[in-house]
Image 1 (cartoon, rainbow, N blue to C red):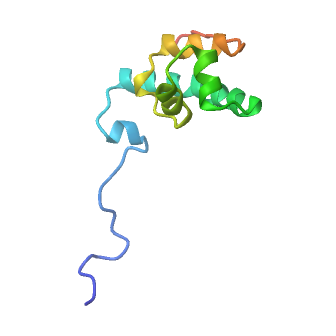
Image 2: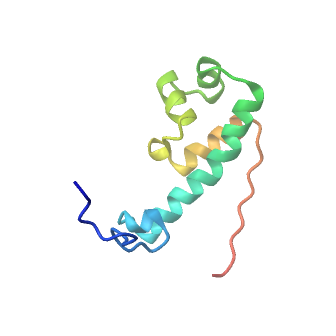
Length: 101
């Protein structure tokens, strides 16, 4: 049976920002972006050291299930402050820049 959908017709219009499209506020979006910006080098350091979840949990002083969540990028459980602590415990330097918009 042929499709009744018109060809090349978009299902919905997006803003180009998936988080905005999902209904997150600008403040929530910024928090998610900061968490991600912290997670990328943390994850790279973990991979460079070839750490197991058990080793990671010990270094970061967290429970193993939380280490698993961190490795999988499920960042909603971790505050920005907590992510900063993780970077510190892994020996990473964090620089924060604030400028007018």
